[in-house]
Image 1 (cartoon, rainbow, N blue to C red):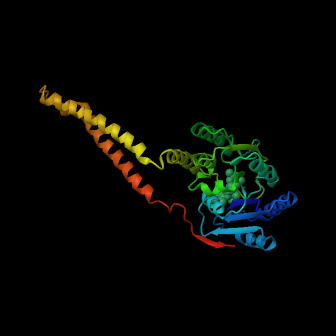
Image 2 (cartoon, rainbow, N blue to C red):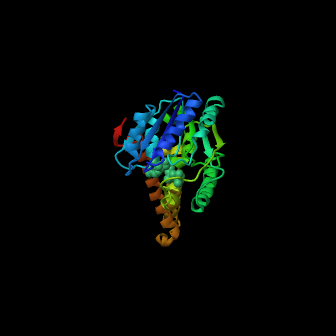
Image 3 (cartoon, rainbow, N blue to C red):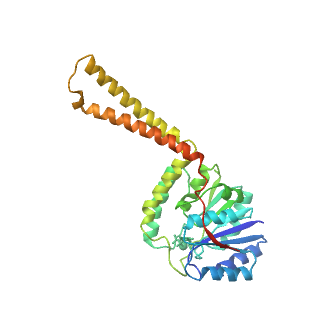
Length: 311
Ligand code: UDP
Ligand code: MG
């Protein structure tokens, strides 16, 4: 199969029929064999009914329904696991991304041999409350990751099939998939200017303030896990040993001051408290590193979701 289109969706019933026929039309005119994987992220409207209807009309449609709302990252992850296509394209369900971009994205993955091509909504049709924070977000992510993309969080992206099987997206990390891919070793990351359209039906699901806190925290986790996830001791251990040594040297010095030079009242010196603190913090950091190493050996349950139905 040439192509899998993964569509995470929550309460997008009105948009789905139009989207599905549009994708079908584009794939058929370009002679691409395809599947459309719709992941219903706990919708409370008629989305799942609509998906069942689309499945009956077109066998290329597949649907997965979560028992509750887990978030866009979880939906993408589960959709990725299900794909069979040689190229995988993700797309928002709200018709803000245009299926007309599909052929060129497929070509870039296949012929220009990119691991990942991210869409760039150069001309955006969203309110200022979304576009201004996004500029800041992209600048910080570019700076922290060293990846030269303009629009990290674009819902429209294309991947080579094996890339999506190799990366793990959870929490709110769908914003940073290029960073995750880079850390996983897929460094051929490209960009394509894509058409962005105003939302036709429904409302945005990412209008709240949480994204300003969760987003940066996720970026820190990704960078940290990417760098030290497989060897936490190198991070915590280094800091721990360093801190412990500093504390140790200070306390040895103070002990000599007391026993050899008969200095009284070393417990009144700020240095004394600093030395003890450094010793304790050092031990804590070292133990944290040790525990992290133990956990690292036993973690496989991070991405388990309750799936209600699958067709
Ligand atoms: N979405 C989802 N789960 C959620 C929130 C959103 O699957 O918990 C889907 C949503 O249905 C849409 C896509 O993620 O297909 C992008 O969401 P939205 O259009 O609301 O974001 P915006 O374009 O406003 O940033
Ligand atoms: Mg949208």
